[in-house]
Amino acid sequence: MKKILINSIIFLTIAAVVAFVLKNNKDEMKDEVRLAQIKPDFIPVNVVPLKKMMIDMGFQVNGNLIPNKEVTVSSEIPGVVTAILAEDGALVKSGQVLARLDDKTIKAALDLARANFEKIEKDKKRIENLYAAGGISQQDLDNIQLAHTKAKTDLVSAEKSYENTFIRAPFSGINDKRYIEKGGYVKGGGGLFDIVDIDRMKMIVNVPESQIQQILLGQKAKIGVQALQNKEYEGTVTRIGTRASEALTFPVEILISNASKELKSGMFGTATIEIQSNEALTINRNMLVGSIKNPQVYIYKDSTAVLKNIAIGQRNDNYIEVVSGIKEGDLIITSGQINLTDGAKVGIKE
Image (cartoon, rainbow, N blue to C red; front, side, top):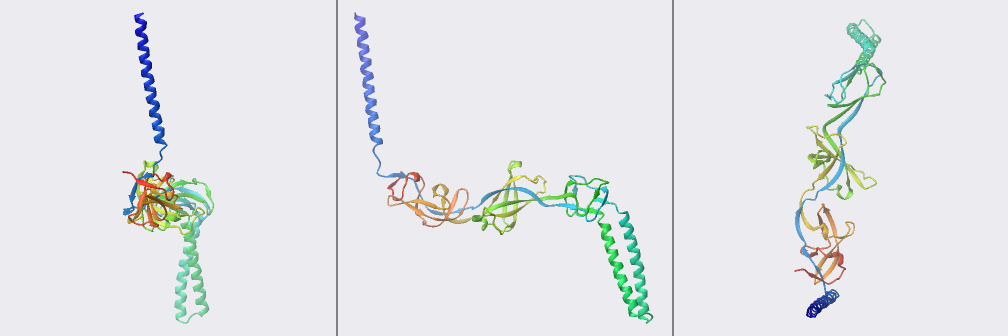
């Protein structure tokens, strides 16, 4: 009986404690709900004063590398290939003979033209001497001069035809591809070799119209190449397009030194074009409300958020130049803009 009484007392004590805790929790929840329903008189915000700062107004554009020069070497005359003197991948010098065409007939024509010219040359001197002595007429002199001119023209033509049997590299570079075999017949104008100059590479990038005026000929750029772990190379702007595409971009050509021959045609790169640093009123991009096309910011004035339209100038990945709309010293609201409306009451966070 005594044991039952003790157990009853313990049970009632526990029940009383649980009831007390539940009541306290309920009272605390009511207080939290009541506090949550109390709306503040202002929206807390952070601000920074608008000031001038030095910023690098650079930007990045992407493109693919291509050789500085590339050409398909062709033959000016038809003929049979008698020798190939440059294989695929070989380094070649400007003027180096890459292949030879059959020259038997052409060489014979050259020898005949040279012999004929030499004979006419002697005849011309003899006739000129006779004319000076009054031994022949003006007509005889005119005839030999005409024959001499024709013989010289024939010789030059024969020399050119003979030279055309030598297929030469137009500039120093690499024989990227050969299209002919020894003994094969080539037509005049047909492609024989692809020669590329990779001592220097170039990248053609498309620059938006908003930034094209910031680029100058001779301006430096840094090229990061993805395939080479983003290794950087220095480039120089060598051409700026004058006609925009349908996407309102302009082609800009950047020349890059490739003395190491690491860069290959087709590699993807990112060009960082640095614009000259200048001091300007500047805001961080995250302070902007709206878009670049319709830029706005909130400023703090007399405990009120005031929405201001601004005009912007140069910009980079982090900062935007403010041209007009606000002035130096204005307090720019940097946080809480999503909750603001023009004229909302605000307070600066401590």
